[in-house]
Length: 145
Image (cartoon, rainbow, N blue to C red; front, side):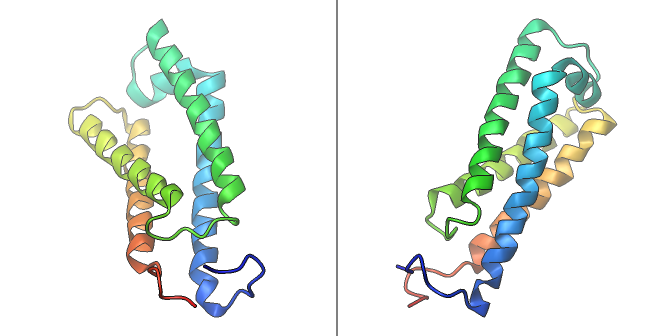
């Protein structure tokens, strides 16, 4: 276990990059959350090209609420948590982005997403691949003293 007051060494530069990576995703999440909470009709129309019904608006607002929680949790923990394989928060980031990519690629393949909604595919891919790379390169238990 690494003491909380341990000096940061050059080997921690990957941790700093990961914190910025998580921070960038937090910014995207909070922006999407605000839009989904405030103007869900507009977001649904831009992404899917269909006028939304009441159930879709409710689901969009619920998703906005969940994104708000994720963004806050990410902002609060990105510097405080050592995200290494086996860490539940890290696994959640990796799973969330991998599943998000899978869902958006299927939606794109089925023609459900409008061109504006297609931005979700590379965003989820970027973060899924990024977290996979961090997962592969992260130090394992026993690698640090």
